Every structure is written in C-alpha cells, then in structure tokens.
Amino acid sequence: MATETLVPLESNPEVMNKFLQKLGVPSSWSVVDVMGLDPEMLSWVPRPVLSVMLLFPVSKSYEEHKQKEENEILSKGQEVASDIFYMKQNISNACGTVALVHSVANNIDKIQLTDGYMKKFIEEAKSLDAAARGALLEKSEGIINAHKELAQEGQTNTPSAEDPVNHHFITFINKDGVLYELDGRKAFPINHGATSPDTLLEDAAKVCKEFMARDPDEVRFTVIALAATD
Image (tube, rainbow, N blue to C red):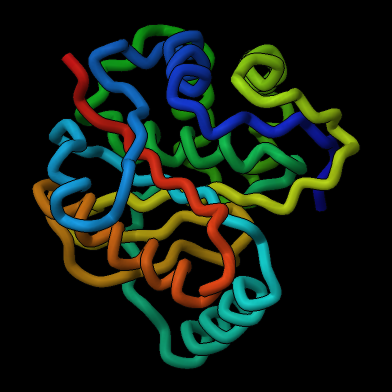
C-alpha cells in the first residue's frame, strides 16, 4: 500500500541524469530519448543499451491486460532468473525512481557505481524479496530526497504531490539472455522471451508497441533508454 505520495519525476533525460549522477552513477551511462520505434529511429540510440524504460498512461486496457497476464502466469508458470533485481513500488508517483533503480541494479556488473545512496541501497536490498525492497526504498532518505529535489526541475509546470497522475514507468532489461519487464505495480517480473545485449533495444521496442496497440487512441507514450554516452 502506498504510504507517501511524491511529485513524479519528469521523463526528461536531463533531469533523470542529474538524479542518477547525484546517486553515484557515472556520467558514461546516461538516459537518452528514443525518438521512435522504427529501425531507423532505433539506430540513432547510442550503444550499448542497458535498459529501456516506457512511460505510458494507466488505462482500463492496461489494468485488464495486467490481470489477465498475471492469471495466465499463475496458472502456467514462467521462468525468472533467481538473481534478477525486482522491487515493488509502494510510494505513489515513485515509478520513475523505481524504473531507474531497476535499470541500474540489474547492470551493476557494467556500471561502476561510486559510493553513494544508490550503491548502499542496492547492497542492502540484494538479499531481500521484492516487497521488502520496496519497503526499504521508502526508508532510503538519500534516494527519496534526490527524487524530491529533481522532481522540481524540468520543462513542464511542476504538479503538486496531490495532483492526480495516471502515467506509469516500467523497465525492460536483459538478464541471462532473457527480456524482462519490471513493473513495480505487477506481482512479479514478466519474461518476454529471448534477447541479447545487442538486440535489447529492438526486442523491448516490440513489447512497447504491444502496449501502444492496446490503447490505439492514446498518444502519450514516451520511450527512453539507459545507454553508453562516453
């Protein structure tokens, strides 16, 4: 159950990169815009890509698909890597922060984190289950305060924490050759089949298109990626 409501983090790479760097992620890895999902647009994204994040409106079709997907997985089962870093989202409007934590925590073999709040949180959360990780984030003042500070930045008018927000961030990562969707509002990670470090962006884009196809009248979708930028 959500215990605190934050002002949402804007889907603005500049703001998100300040947030990541404040928490100890080196500037050689940055959030970049994915301007489109066709092959030419995807070719503009710097490589390698460590994660893909989708911001989308929470709609009736999202909720219906979420329930149907969960029921199918509970009845049929799915393979999920035991060492995947997945956490529940307990704090309202913290989905941007959860998406970024999912992106970094599942790539710490590639991202040389400096000592700071992100490294401390990941080390403390490593041995916990998804619910306990979500609870730990609520108590991680360094990360929460960085979110609050950076949520005030950006190009749009800053909403108040009480303003209704119906957009949600999720993350796609490659773990052991499998594409996983990490959504802090879902019951577990979702296995979307085979991928690779080289095809993560293209494979995640296909799933993003499925989200868009379920809401054909909706245009408020944003895709960003955590990629090498040095």
